[in-house]
Figure 1 (cartoon, rainbow, N blue to C red):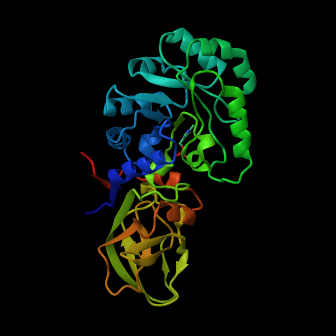
Figure 2: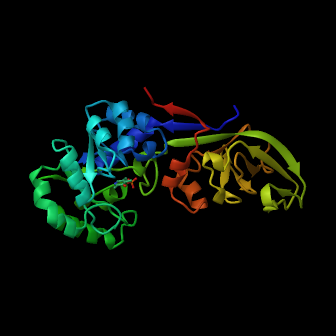
Figure 3: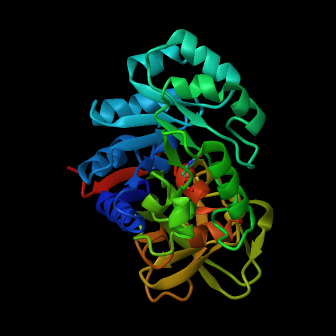
Length: 348
Ligand SMILES: *Cc1c(COP(=O)(O)O)cnc(C)c1O
């Protein structure tokens, strides 16, 4: 086949959710963050697989993502939206039963005016300075907000992937000061926060990346395999160059495989001369620049030319690829392109 094969293991997603769920007390609900189309893996399929293992609360970035998840999972679960109630989203929020996590006094007013009888939550800023009400905003509106029974109060940790970072304790303390004793359910932890321990778990955790097999959840099962077809191979003599800009020169007579994926497929251009593809268990360096549709790979050391080379597989996962590109697994996943042939394992 002329395109790469992207395999997504939904059973592994379910196993990862169960493993994260076991890390908190039974009284804590483990939800799932499925924003950005389930971190690029297919939000509808991921959400259905998670619904089947017992997830009852899903988190998305915006209302329109929420509608896609609602269509996939039906009416039995809650869908929370991190961006809150934005201008123009009232019909989607009302029509699809999405619970906005209100981020500002402006959003609070908008929600109470437009959808006075519909559920909402509140996002509080405990120091990340990205989304949520600042302590002063919150003091001004908390009595009004609480009298209308928010479903949940949440905040988000800026440094949870670094267990030793003092920011974690500072945010925990501030979250307690802002949110405790209010009766609403509380949520502070995403994947990193779950791993920080029980005092970060409150009533509900909302992991994303750990479900999809990425750090900081070291014990995650890998979810994604990406196998790319070799279009042709060629001999390159010592001293010849490969690809745009002549950025790689053969030091010896070499065998180069040209493989069907490039930056248009999310193989980041910063992986030029840096990534490693796998032929079974044998590492093969990507040489030369990543171009739009192609990469070139040194396979001189293999005893025969393979039909495919793997960019993500059991031997090299998303975090190793991310490290080679100076990025994080989240960006690798959400960049996976639309041209791959996608297949799902464990799908019903
Ligand atoms: C993306 C996100 C999450 C999930 O974070 P992970 O690190 O992927 O587990 C949770 N909460 C908020 C507010 C987010 O933006």
